[in-house]
Image 1 (cartoon, helix red, strand yellow):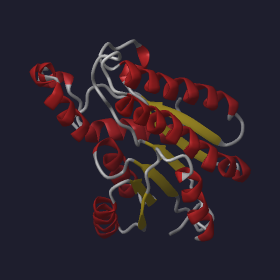
Image 2: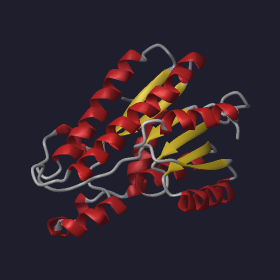
Image 3: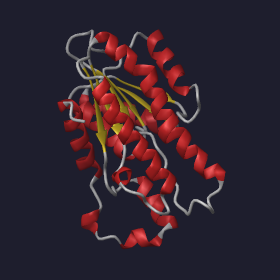
Length: 234
């Protein structure tokens, strides 16, 4: 797999790549000839996607299964890539989970995994990969937040709070990285037609009543995130 050091081909690491916005972003990157490291928990789906993207777009793609909610997962990924001498030019943090329900009635077993992945996993990925980008003087970061980051959302209190964290961290990081050659961008999609929405509808029938024009197309969301990231927008 090529990196910034071999010709003009770049390598992107995409978390949450097995479905939804993460998969769409991986596909958009591949369309532009960017080589890929695909990360998610499901090895079978990742491997199938890696093979499909390599075949369709002629890029190099590797699948690395990992649960980023585990404290050491990000550093283990970074170590694997160092051993393979693969530098990451574009880091896309899309892995995340959503749990619905009132905070008081929600079991800790549903709350903590959201925090561990949406906050802890994303932060660990940044810590594991951004210093090397700064050292090389180039890199792009795309953190997937949510429109929920902008206001409190009853029944999604913890999820919204984790996404507010992602947005705030990204905006602060973008300023800290100014002048280093590394940019940080936050993508804040609204309700999008993904598996996450399908699962949410199963527990909240009101979501099924939303008019179609309020539900975003996953490919369009990915295209906008890709454009903003490549332009270095915050």
